[in-house]
Length: 395
Image 1 (cartoon, rainbow, N blue to C red):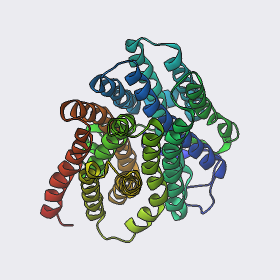
Image 2 (image 1 turned 120 degrees about the horizontal axis):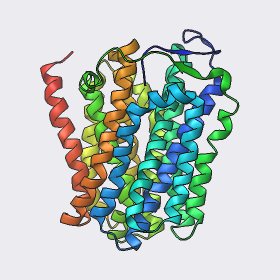
Image 3 (image 1 turned 90 degrees about the horizontal axis):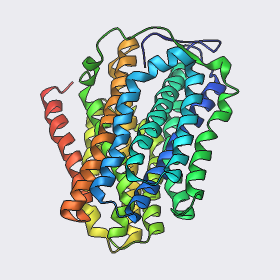
């Protein structure tokens, strides 16, 4: 993401009109991201476990997603300068779909590392450009509504992905083919959105690293969310299997987490508009995440109760991203906000790199409960670091 973005042949940002063709194209792209990750992460983990790969190595392979995202964030502006936003999105969609098929075609474990790199690089580019597109074509008076729809569609994709996995299973070509088809479907609305495509015409005005700590309560929140989300999607099916649930039952628990995100994103966003200091809300979300993680091992024997807790837990934890992004926007503006958004995504990607490996190693060391304990550590660290800072800087 770069500073000084402008919209070509679309309503000005100060207008109340919405370039819906661009909004639909961007949301469709981000919906494909959610579906692809929601289906792909648990699918790949189950396939690897069936081949005898340890949780630690599965976590290591999944962590390549974070590395790919870290590489994609600074590369996206250059790709966009060469190919334009729509052209870059078309290329990313093609690369993600081809690598999704590649997971079925290539069986040696080592080949899944470059495949993960290509897949998640492409998916991250789709994520970054879709989010920028939505922000660029949304007028201030309706931006909250549109971003609420965006977050809900993304969460719905994450919820539907595991549900599709629970229906089709992990055998044969079908789940891989469905994943590729989901990604390719994002190209259809792009064909009709050429007039509302935003243009990036300037470079950032400050060093990138400055923005990693400009609003630490937001960037640390998205780091925790990235770690919990990616690690949970990748390893929750293994956690569910290890505590006695069937493959389908474990996948449906993962869907409960995603459905919580779908149901609560807009209410949490509205709530954040009514609080004076969003840092307090972020700390409350982290405290709920910590409590839910510690409760999780106590509910192994009751699928229904565990699903209810995970529904609420998943929705509130996803608020770390939504409210963190809102808090970022309330503290910065213009070029600073554009650069900070890139730093925000970078921290999310860093969490994706750390989370799966941490959770996988914790499960190998401490058994199934190690999954929940590792989640708890992420939330506790955020509460400690940001809570102390908030007390020192109350305004």
